[in-house]
Length: 188
Length: 188
DNA sequence: TTTAACAGTCCGTTTGGTCGGTTAGTGTAC
DNA sequence: GTACACTAACCGACCAAACGGACTGTTAAA
Image 1 (cartoon, rainbow over the protein chains, first blue to last red):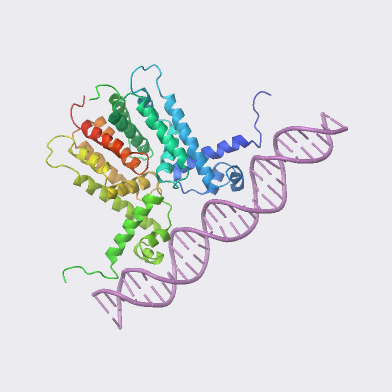
Image 2 (image 1 turned 180 degrees about the vertical axis):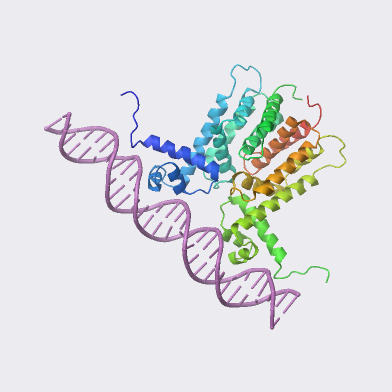
């Protein structure tokens, strides 16, 4: 049959399930959740999880990298290719981070969680490369550096605040509109 | 004597030492550090720590509240009382959060750490009140809401990024200057 | 002498990780 | 096409270490 039937054992399917579940559980309950809890939430035993990710460190790293990639995907998806003026990338960044995508919120939370407060030096080289890539993308966007930095970190601050119950949808809407306006001239 | 001599046992001194040490260790190594490690870093045994803070929850709550108070103190200290125009409070906020005070960085990190990703409902009522107080302070500052939100969250994003090695001092300086400029008219 | 700020020890629980066993998938020979 | 062999996905029981917290002892302060 052409329709991929449901098999009881599927390496890739299980791996994905564990990865997605781990990301969700991490963002919901913090970084200290146990492997047993993650495994249970993913519908596997801890032994099964250990088969796919030989250590906790390995799982954390996989979740982290996966989220980092999703960040890029999501931002690219929010770039309006028809815009032929500076700030295109920055606007995509703002739209992605301040949008209502549950998907992206998880990715950003995990990225921040492990980048800022997670296990030290868990994936240093990768983090450094990723940070540089973001810097370069913003630098190539044609906005004055200060303005770009302000907008960028405002978007990140908003994305972080989205995980709390203290940022109202109205505030988010207003802030988002302001950030998009700030990407347009005059910049002075 | 009027000079407070160094006593070998001093409730308040020890409590402060534990509190400050705990905050430092939390920001350095994440929220999962053990009480034993905190106690050792503070120069006390775990038993001694348990005498001052009967449970882990109690210690976390004390650190959290302490940091929240320090945030207010630091921001107030950075307000220029001679400014007689809108944005006074917001500028103080920016100066405090984007300054180079190691002191404040720790406070903000811990606040964010436990507010966003820490133990759920560890001090919910207090958090809610605190969040409302910040909202009201910004609302009373005379800036357009969107502009105020953008600046506020940019400052917070920058403060968060300060804990990482990926924000250069030059970037911080430029971003800080831009945020201060954004508090001034014209606001469009 | 009394109080309380500690130190030191112990225990039940939880955690990350290991290991041997079980069974579903897959290639191969007939 | 089906029987067989082999690989690997997955399970379940287990262990040593670490943890939070309770408890008892010790000693500086009042």
